[in-house]
Image (cartoon, rainbow, N blue to C red):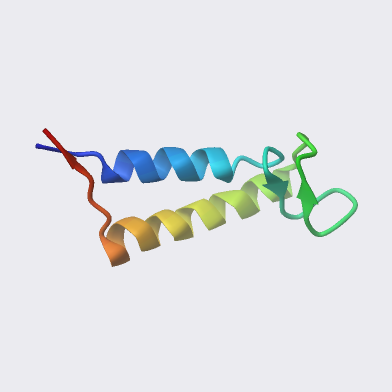
Length: 69
C-alpha cells in the first residue's frame, strides 16, 4: 500500500501558496493582494516559510496518511 498523504498535501499547498496565484503576502502596494499574478523576492520568502510551517504541521505533527491499494 502506498502512502499518498505527503504527495497530496504538498501539491495542494504548493498550488494554494504560489505567490500571486490566490494571494500575495506582502503585496506591492498593500499588505495582502489577491489574484494579482505578480511576485517579489520578499513574497517568495514569506510563502516559502508558510509552506514549510504548514507541511510540517500536517505531516509531522498531525500525521496525515492517505493509503491506496
